[in-house]
Amino acid sequence: MSTQAREVPAGAPLLAARGLVKSYGRTEALRGAALDLYAGEILAVSGASGSGKSTLLHCLSGIVRPDAGSVSYGREQLDRLPEERLSELRRTDFGVVFQFGQLIPELPVIDNVALPLLLAGVPRAEAHTRADAWLERFGVRGQRELRPGEMSGGQVQRAALARALVTGPRVVFADEPTGALDSLGGEQVMTALAHAARETHTAVVLITHDAQVAAYADREVRLHDGTVQESPVLPQAVAHDH
Ligand SMILES: Nc1ncnc2c1ncn2[C@@H]1O[C@H](COP(=O)(O)OP(=O)(O)OP(=O)(O)O)[C@@H](O)[C@H]1O
Image (tube, rainbow, N blue to C red; front, top):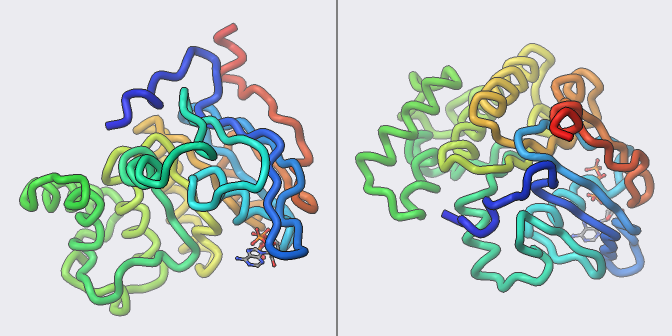
């Protein structure tokens, strides 16, 4: 458990990015992006294709190191942390969900969801009990023995949410989690994610093109050519604390 990062002073953002710059060859994916994420809020990040949304998410979650700028998580600065600490944070504090679930195709869904717990040293029986509880919550416990290829896209995404939340993360990073689903499937996944996030006070960074998906968020920022168009705004819940 990362006690260090979990100590966030009241009213301070959980995650704060400043002046993020990231280039791939001559392509400037991020050009000074800044963002605040508060504990427990759902933040939508929208913007045109190629505006830098995925790159921003990768920098915020410590998957990619920015060329310049900083990402603070609680008392730690992700862009300066050694790789081992970043890996630990990704196991304990962060969950990720991608467009196509990215579950391991060879493993039954129960083992996919239990895996982050097993990697964190949780005994197998307990890991399976906790994984089952999350599968139940997302309405896919009946599919626990199936492999991802035997499930519908919506079922895979709900299992991917279970895997992202099973460790009790502080932040879930979701990159177009409904992008491959029809509108009903997308609604079910978003409703499940929003309920679970609110109940567990988990913050969510939600990348989406879709206004209906963004409507599940507390707040929305837009990326344009690698910069965040709306300056960080205090969410109502935090503003009331002052
Ligand atoms: N690994 C990479 N190698 C080379 N170029 C990259 C890489 N990742 C991103 N880019 C480029 O950086 C720019 C921003 O890409 P990014 O994926 O962050 O945008 P996006 O807003 O998420 O796009 P989309 O909505 O299409 O997924 C694009 O021009 C893209 O081609």
